[in-house]
Length: 329
Ligand code: SIN
View 1: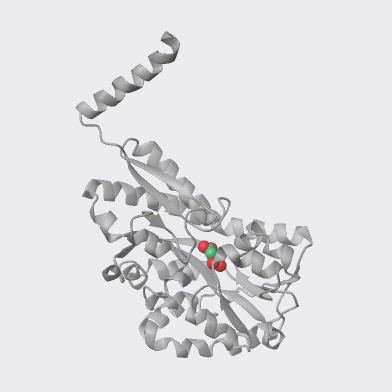
View 2 (view 1 turned 90 degrees about the horizontal axis):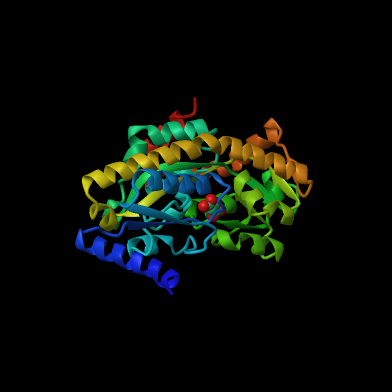
């Protein structure tokens, strides 16, 4: 009897004491994303959770929901705005309904590598983008890396003509649609959670993604070829809602920013190795053939896709495109 009721009694006393001395329950920060825990974004979210647990115990608790378990990427902005989740890190291509400026990250063959992406993001212009859509009720808290995109399909893609007539799943971005139209292919915008089944059921013939996303979601098991094209980038912006952010004290904002910046720096430092390891796992699996482009073949892809820049110059702004180009050193 005593053993049964004593713990309940202690809990009751603690709750009573907490209520009377004004202990507030910690604020829950739900962090939703669509990829696995073993990807750069998954690692950043878990690191942020750990840092907050260690340093802000009793003030904040971070709950991480990976693999679209809470929201899919076509619902995420609404979820943040409605305070159903407090943080998310959608890829920049998913911001097309929020702002046209971030389209710069989707332009094909703009960034030569992740060093250039980082340099641009750290520039004044790149940092300004984080708050450029605050009138939409959202604030960017930082950039998070994934990596360069590769093209996959159920046939070898060595020159742009090889892709003509094929259907490719894309993220919901007009730039990405135009990129595939430019090579005579059809772009099919769908959420990330559907890509594996779209590929395995043959609803689409191919897709574009980073090595870590391809490997962690097993896309290489349902595609015969992956062309190492590095033709674009998938990177993320960590977002929160203005309502949530402005409800926090300046001290809480400062501490959360510090925690997030550290988590981002940690994950970004691992991102490149994560891509290389995933690439090697794909090769070792022998499931899909990895296709290398010759210099001339690569030049043909660049020539076919580059006209897309002009199409979106007015939306993005020529100065911003020039700034991004200048990050290639
Ligand atoms: C992600 O990395 O968050 C998803 C990318 C995609 O939708 O292809």
